[in-house]
Image (cartoon, rainbow, N blue to C red; front, side):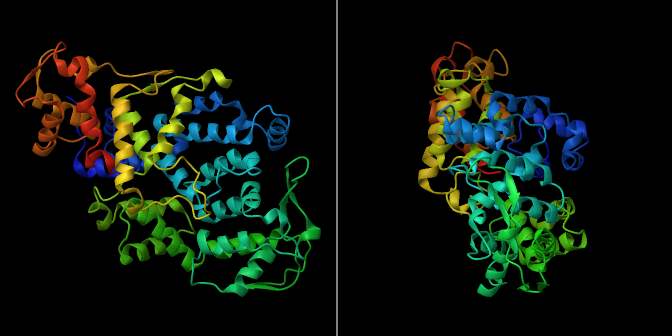
Length: 480
């Protein structure tokens, strides 16, 4: 019978992972407890993650350069949409397999914050590299994350900075930098947006031949700029330095501190986090020079976090990844080209799209929602239930995948149904079965609590998927 973490430990590990599995619980105990595991996770470079790292090789184009990618699309070898679909598959599978669970969660969080949609005709040339940059800074300093994300070619293309010049400044990136990435609405006015755009002119990409990053001094708008409390002579044609100073100013602004604090509290505590928690996290952020790790430590040490168990609904990606993890589904490497289309590694996108949204496909620059309300509709629930049943039964995907056989879920040759439900609850939900869960399982399968279950029982022969799906459809699995 799987050994359980305490409710408090399960809460901490569950919030900063894609689901508590028996294997993850063993890692937590080996680390010395949930707190020690959390500290280990804050240093992902010290955690061996070979199984997850090898996944990158399944899709070689993720590491091709922008010129090569564009030429392959232009010659009809491989479309940008195909490369981006492979990127989405890779992030889903990496979340399933990685031992650096907290790093994966934080990478996804910031990739939504600095959102560059994968479904763009030109930014695909840089989108995979953009994800790598976000991953590098996910647990570091926010000022460095902001600098490298905002001036990255994928962001420049996505928000039209590549066409922004001193004669015709494009305000998209300058506005979203203020509204979405840093200080938020109400902290700036339209004059600030105009000068924000002027500061960022010059950062561009060769959109005609190489798709390489460039800085065009002829396009940079010189002259004094003022954005809120930031002022600069901006006299040089090379605006890199004024950009650096401007982004540093924004990263260290108290309003940005509140934006970052509120985002973390919304993700890891609840949709409407306590004002006092946001204020405290903002103070920690500023006191530690925009370092993200100290803010996370303060968050998990807060009373609000400890009291928030069960209050966050999993989004479609979190649900799918958690389901594959707890069911122990083994996804194999797909063959290249059309031969791999029906393989599970490639079918993941159909599943998660049907549940609501595929990774980084949110059409607006504000990024995929991180609140619970957005993912709590009846339609979302029904879609999740359909995927849960299909995976529990091993129906689809059916190629390039190995499912656990029904009889392998039996903890012994003969077991009472109520004991089986409790054992499965421990494995899938990481908690003891409640009377309500047992009742639901009895209704779903027609079994009585004390009924003897063996390998030849009808439940095992053709009805185990109903039992597994009932656990997966429970609130304990749909929340984190």
